[in-house]
Image (cartoon, helix red, strand yellow):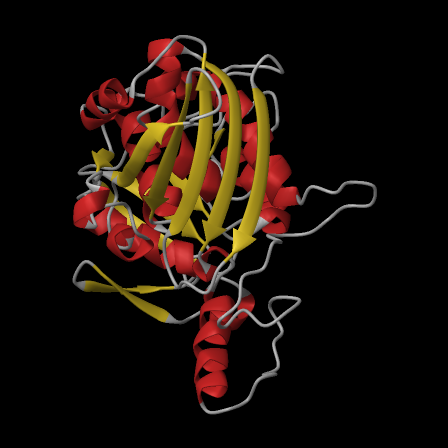
Length: 347
């Protein structure tokens, strides 16, 4: 730790998640003596305004990665697979937002409000869950702790910002083109037009698998975070919707013990990071537009499944860039600092 704070690296600083990480670091007043942004070659030298000062984007090299205490990484799996171990070798702890490290046995997968103790087992890298999983865990972990889970059927409605800035730009451009009469605007980010459309595909299908890689991530990460196996049945369908920010999810959850809608509301209302918004007659329920810009996850439409015992339906919404990625990464850095878990770790 530096004299008056930690030396913090932000890898992927010019991307949508990286920019949000920088904002959250300032908002939460993380004790940073120094913040070093790292970016791709095309952005090296670019100046970023942060907390009243200008930071210059640095290239990745053995010289520039030295001397950091913690690195918040969101530069993509290929970059993380190469550079996260090098940051660790140089003495930093890496909190990684990419999918590369999440399912490694030696890497804890941490949601700050759900399984913070798992961070103590890190060997230099702590993984941030997928943004879709993160939003879901905030609602399901309290239920699992209280009454246990038996079965989950999840449908997601995911904002384009989960794909990055190019997807945001594509939705904006295509929407304008369609409104001007072009029914077939070109697109490069998604396999079909996203404007005024819903795509039942998030990420890709691997050969021989009729679930997408995103759906597989959500199922596997849920089990790892909650510490459950195949005894909890999980089925997930992920869709991309023409929303800029905020993932929404419909969750059908069967519990091991009975949980009434009223008790579920009370349970979630006292859970950290969760806000219950559940007066549908008055038009009060979680919406992406309300979740955007917030760190809390919104939960509502809590009701019994009419045909399945011990089963509830929930509607959940959360900001995929904030709690779904950046905010949790900063929260993990905070708990690492609070628990004296920064610095070199033994194998």
